[in-house]
Length: 121
Image (tube, rainbow, N blue to C red; front, side, top):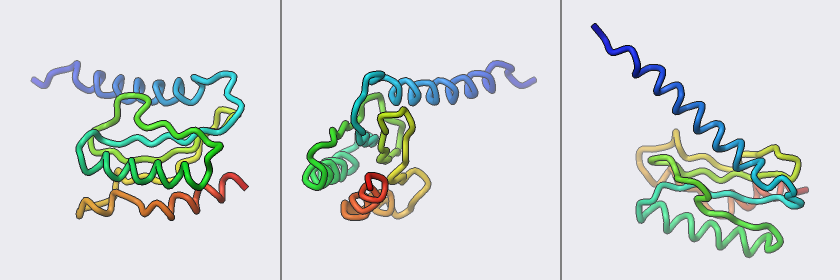
């Protein structure tokens, strides 16, 4: 006989992740400006790419705060999200479903900057 609790636990984990994202988006209830959030796995390769990307974003839009991994990141993740003051969010880049090879998971910083400009204008 198969165990009964596993499926419910997996569904609960998915719901918990969604709730965490909503809390993150709504966490700054008095948020008056947009914020860029970079979520990346904690391996070295991901960290180097996130650092280069955050530096490019800060140079291009110094008025926007850039947060790197405000919550525990998911395994193998690399996402860049724009959180708007009204509580909505726009995904600038996701590398979760990309690859192999691994280098496809990481965007060129200019691609993300161009996408950010589209959402800000």
